[in-house]
Image 1 (cartoon, helix red, strand yellow):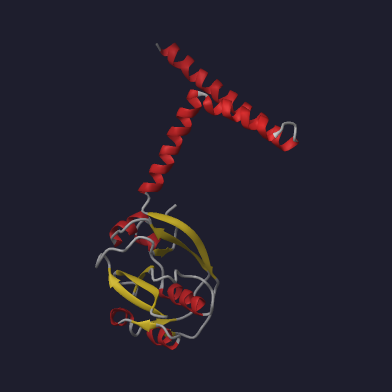
Image 2 (cartoon, rainbow, N blue to C red; image 1 turned 120 degrees about the vertical axis):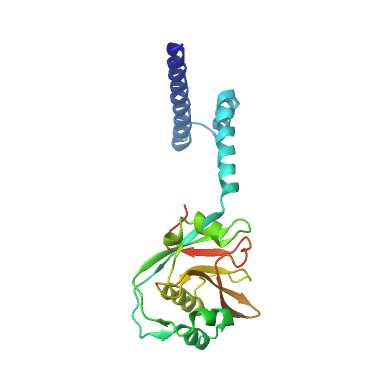
Length: 224
């Protein structure tokens, strides 16, 4: 029984080697121009018609589709913040001077917070694939430590957006950051969006409500 199992594994390995060899030959044909396109297509059709190849291809594609469908967040990209020095500014006053409307809940949480310069860093941003609560999103991002950003990060990106750089979604969807008012306070969700011809900022305690799909979430580290 054990020898039959080993033989089966060996046959599987040989089959893979044969397939790789055939695909390598096809690639060589294309690169060297030794075969016309219709000849290459004919060979590919023969390989794909192989029952085992079709089974493996189908199984792999189903796994990929399932992974994508089950993923709560999809990484969109990263953005680098260069080191910046500045005199400390009060964040609400700075945002309002820039023409950003600050909702009262944001003022309640962040009024009086002074923001200075920041060190260079890179943030990841993700799109939300389905409606979800903060607790679910934080889990997908790898926990609060990975998800947390700073008021300096937030203000820097708002300033870049208002300077003409396309940093945020500007179609009515929210751009969300997980930030603490100070090191001893709880994490809260701060969000900025374009509504009624202006940027506005708001903030909520975690799990105050669920987020709609297609929002962007900025974090210290990627979920991928």
